[in-house]
Each structure stands twice: as C-alpha cells, then as structure tokens.
Image (cartoon, rainbow, N blue to C red; front, top):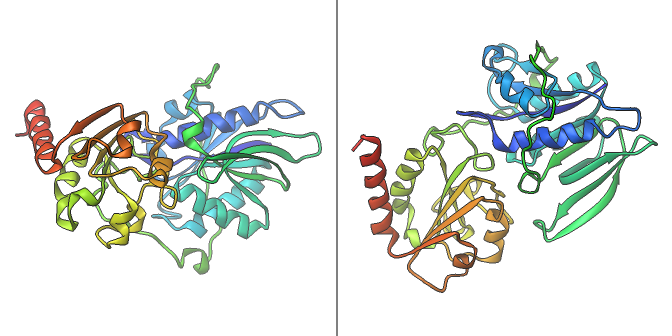
Length: 332
C-alpha cells in the first residue's frame, strides 16, 4: 500500500507546486489508521533525470518513472491511464497531484476512467477508519472552505498549492529507488496530445508552477506590447501571464490568464504590469510570495496587495529593467 504523487518538473527540477503536493501526500500517508504508508512519486520523462535527492527530501520513499520510449510528451488521458495501472499495481490508497492545469486535467481523466470521485483544491485530508477520507478544500477561488467526505479507493485529490507550503521531511530517505513503469495504452489514450511553443516557456515551467511570472494587462496597449515582457520573463527564468481583459481582447491565449477563471499562481515573484487588479485577478495571484506592480495609476486596486510598486509608464520601466538585468549579467 502506498500514496502516489504525480510530480511535474521544470528546468530547475521538481516544480514548486509538486513539492507542495508531496508535502501534502507525506502528511496524508502518515495519518493512516493502520499506521503510516510510503509515498511514491510518479514522473513522466527519462529515468536518468529523476531528481531523486529533491524528491526524497520532501518525503518520497521511491519513484516510478514513465520514460519517453513508452509515452513521449503530454497526453492527459494516457497519463491518467498510466496512473490507473500503477495505482492498481502498488495498491495505492490515494493518488495526489498539484492543482495545476495538468494536475487537475490528468486527475479528472483518472476519475472518469476509474469511475471514482475526485476532490480538487484540497488543503487538508485525513483517512477515516471506514476507508473514506475527510477532506477540506477551497471553493469559490478560496473564498470559502468546504468539508467533505471523499469515498472510493484510491482517493483522488489535487492540492491547492497556494495554501500548502512545501516542507522538507523530518527523516528523508537516504537513497531513492527508481522503478521504470511501462503503461498499457491503446490508440484512444494517445488521440489527444498537447504541444507548447518555446516562446514564453524558456524555463520549462507552466504558469501554475513558474517561480517567476511577469503579468501584463490592458496597460500593455496591445499584442505588440508584450515583447518587452517576454524578454524580461526570459531573463528572469519565468513565464508571461495576463489579465482577463487581455484574453477577452484576443491579445493572448486563455492558457496565460491569471485569475479566478484562469490559473491560480504561486510564484516567488509576480511582476504585474499595467494590471488594475480586479478581485477576480487578485484571487489568482494572491498566492505569490512577492508582488511587484508597475502602473501609471497610483489608485489601482492591485497596489494595495503589492510589496513594492512603481508608479510609472511600463513602456519606460520594463525596458530599463531589461537593460539593468543585462548589464548586471554581462549580456548587454
């Protein structure tokens, strides 16, 4: 018996959101009525690139890896099918993932394939004696908490990453065994595949897992106004996010939207440029550790949530930041 945790990776190793999910999984695994069970990380990628030390540090006792030879690229149904087979093989009591775009999508597929309920955006979970799980989860973009009983085995959950800090394990495993896993897939599992353009993803991170997000709103002025933000995000190893009005105008795709109806982000730094800060947007970026705002309006609502603010024209401020960063790094 074990608890499985889907781990996403970026250029620097395990995504921060996945480390938070591992922390959640470790707490869940240690709370079983019959005693603690081990946590196993599940990764899609080459076995020789599994970040064993980092996974062990946050509570994983082993890792199962699906290599590109068996499943290359992101195919949500195929990922879910792999998790379903693996969960049966190891007699998993729960399957956990970060509440990222991919985590929520894969776990929804897993619920559909297995006929099991899936609880999204959980912040607490504890197994009960009768095999159910008592969960507490965010609803309405975190404006209220719901307590619920989650039935079915294994229990399927995604973790509201902005509410669960990553915490190293008290007694991490000294060595992490890595087990290759070959899923049984058919053509239907591989029918839908997703690809990402290299632009805006220089760090390999998704919007939900990026450590730095450079956001742009109406104040950017139009589609062409995002070029300096893309350059700045690249220099900082981050990705670009946008406000709802930007996607409504068709300037950028919806997958880049930060907010209640977009993606909730938890970066180390959120640099919001030309964004007024409607409550729906704040619901999506409130999990950022540091918020820096560039805006011409000193009364913009987002300034009330900022750690630092620059009241000025982003058309002047962003190029100046780019020049300063290049000069400091010697790439000017």
